[in-house]
Amino acid sequence: MIKTVRDISLAGKRIIMRVDFNVPMKDGKVQDDTRIVASLPTIKYILDQKPRSLVLMSHLGDPDKDAAKAKEKAEKEGKPFDLEAYLSAKHRMKPVAEYLAKLLGKNVVFLPSCFGQKAAIDALPNGAVAMLENTRFHKEETAKDPAAQEVLARELASYGDIYVNDAFGTAHRAHASTATIAKFMNFRVGGFLMEKEVANLEPMLHNPPKPMVAIIGGAKVSSKIAVLENLLKNASSLVIGGGMAYTFLKAQGIAVGKSMVEDDFLDTARQLLDHAKAQGVEVVLPVDHIAADHFAPDAVPVAVNAQAVPDALMGLDVGPKTLELYAKVLAGAKSVLWNGPVGVFEFDAFAKGTEKVAQLVAEATARGALTVVGGGDSVAAVNKFGLASKMSHVSTGGGASLEYLEGKELSGIACLEQK
Image 1 (tube, rainbow, N blue to C red):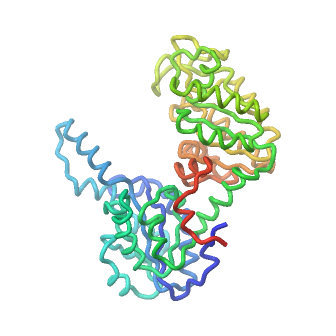
Image 2 (cartoon, rainbow, N blue to C red):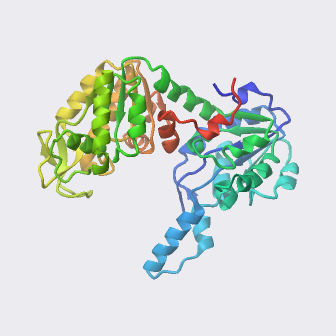
Image 3 (cartoon, rainbow, N blue to C red):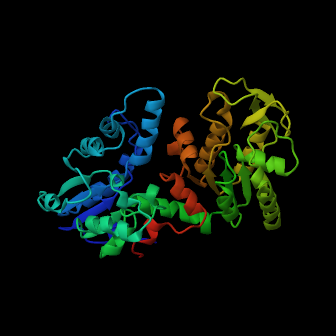
């Protein structure tokens, strides 16, 4: 288990802390503060310990890539493109620093770069909070060349005596501010959010209360195959839904109509089904569907009361018989891991399956099961249906939780001290 801010004396020390403030922005305003709010317990705890200073750092989108796309779009539409206005609206940390200041009821000093800020930090009054500009404005942050990354990492390390990583959402990234900085710090600990994520995801991989049910959905088998393979070690049942279910159905010779299929992964799907059978893991695939003749929010839903999908239709959600199966499987579960929606929940006509899964997982929680929701889309779903508070844990890291569940070592966690 990682050491955390609780395991180290912070009084009078300069703290440099990686947070995940990669929040949606519009016109220079924060649109969703979930990630900022999630960091508050660690920030407040640190400030209560009377540090010399607390300097926060985060990325906010991918300025180069996002600006290039926005510029191309503007040019296609024959509109002028103002790079500075675009970056100010979407990628600068100053409005995030101001937003955090309101939540803390305390001034947050904005530092306009990640380089050359030591004098400004040394001049901060005792107990001050500062925030650096977007780490990804510097090519060194994500550089493939370790020597280039180390230039920024050394600079960031000079701003603190203790490194705190509370950015689980970027823990799978081996970047200057998430992992490389730790090489130049004597003290490297996690925040409470990092601790909470590890504490909830770890049991799902190694010692979940049995029976354990894994619900894996989403569009593509290719992005989830490593997770599915890894979960076979501990799951009693594997519920496969969403677009990826149609690759598994086709792999078994079942007609899927115009449904999304990854033909390159048919053999992989067959192998996984064989592997599950050999391990004694029940695999639950859709037995009926809510389909449509095209993929659109206004497509007319068609109930398909069979496992095979007619040629002219594509499956966009699971049907009522499948949901009854889900309810039976989840009824006795002692632990549930849910990663990925079982239908196109963004379209209201095809959201019922995912909403019902969210309700069933919430009911399992109420019965005493350990329930963990991970992955961006399933988290968006439980938030949409107002059920996030009914789960044991909702992960803040999309890609990070996915890689963790694959059994990969995450750079941003591996670099921290162990208890």
